[in-house]
Length: 213
Image (cartoon, rainbow, N blue to C red; front, side):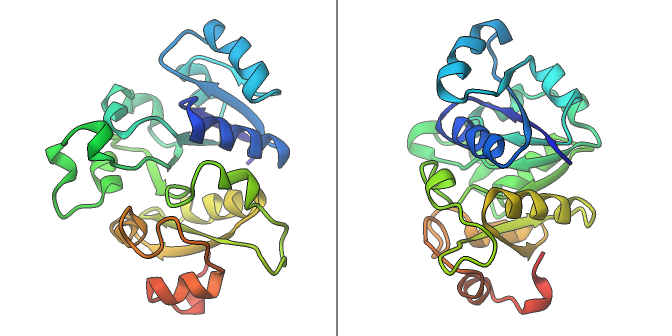
């Protein structure tokens, strides 16, 4: 797994692009604008990333990262993501997204997105870390200050792939369970925005060592 597609070129998307490039991945970035319009911008904010259409980026990728505003998720084309490992890094922010009734229920936001993206192998991660920390907080394996990153998904084969991606980007992956468990590291929880080691996150998520990715 070495080709990454990032849909969205905001602060999270470009930070992930830079970090993935530093970790040796081939990175394609797509937005709602034509690829040609993004090429110059990427030369400045994520040198080495390839500007592409969403169709091309998805087709050429091993992992697709959703880094667009959650309110825009219905602009995605489910048929393009069928069978793809898709990382949901989006968060629901009512003050900026507006009130979206579908995200105010008991289901996690990722479960709502998964229902729309039928056939995608959705895994939630990277949502509980500030965009600036994606680069600043990354550490090599075994480092005393290496931070944990939660990973939640319903696909037993996709979860370890995303866990390996998280690890290569410089964080200790902690598998919390299925997509429903992503509520445990959503906004407003003790995990969200906190700097935790693997053992600290396990404690907060109520996990044992067998649950590690």
